[in-house]
Length: 416
Length: 43
Image 1 (cartoon, one colour):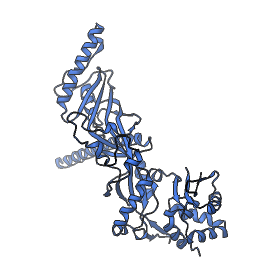
Image 2 (tube, each protein chain N blue to C red):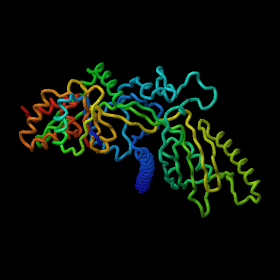
Image 3 (tube, chains in turn cyan, purple):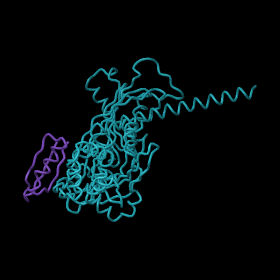
Image 4 (cartoon, rainbow over the protein chains, first blue to last red):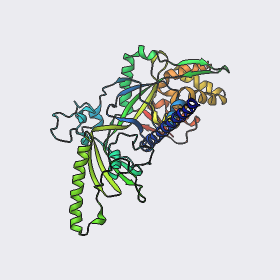
């Protein structure tokens, strides 16, 4: 009997632990998604977790079907960047920026701003301030009692602020500060990707389209893509403001409770003394925070008994978002035309395409086939949706980068 | 949402414009470049 009771209690304990784990996991996933949606609202693909190690010219292999990528983006808010295949060292910076932003002929970005030479001897240790600026909307979040005070973003100001307020029930705002961006146009990056592809044809051939037949006898083609980062957005820090939700009621502390040292305007009588005292308290709190959180560069901007605002500066700016284009890997390891990643995974029609006029024999064949029967146009559209990201017929007929796709269409649609 | 085709020889501009119109484009613009070729854009 005793064993049975123990087994039941153990099972209940396990289920309880699992439930807490799931709740915490859900909370972290939700916060991560909210953060990513803020970045995505600015038409930028979010990076999660934040990293310094993502640059313009990074190439990733994408093997997930487009439908799965769309689902990932909707569910998690970000796309995994787990399959890096190469890092190009792009050229063309000086021409693109026309020597502005301290970019010279010999500049290598982002190293030029990330590790300037000679190295500065005092903060800031980077020259990102010289890079083109960017701005993002603020991000609001809520931390509830018992849901964990760990924010799913690497911002140390949040737990420190919660600790100062002695609360685990607060809502706050994160403002991304000192944001910068740099990048190259697709027309400059794409030929450099082409050059890399030429030198790595054998590798790319391994990822040529795979064909399979489903139970209904329909042939499906699974494609892989080379994703190229052509613009990144970095943030130098964040400004975090937290407001405690515990405006009323008693607080129960477990263990030794530290006395609150936050400023309370209601306890001062003289305005002049209040300002002086406030400055003094803020200074001593900043010193206290600095000594309590080594490694984090936190300063208090304002504090009261119910709210705290802190500025956190990252040691070096972190990448928070990027823009990329995808090129499909075709037969023989050849690359298809560049298509914007964000548009593809957002389910939008990829329409903003520029191609060079380069028709071939298949252009005439396909046009004659289209003219022969009006129904053929819809057949071609269906084929383009599945094999060329829904590109328009005119671009498909004449574009230099659709030469291979035209040959495939002639074969697949039985065009004579 | 614009599709553009560049470097089109003058003799072929009409055909490209027609291809855009056949595909449902309602706003087609042809511009001449310095080298005498054309760029046709459609929305």
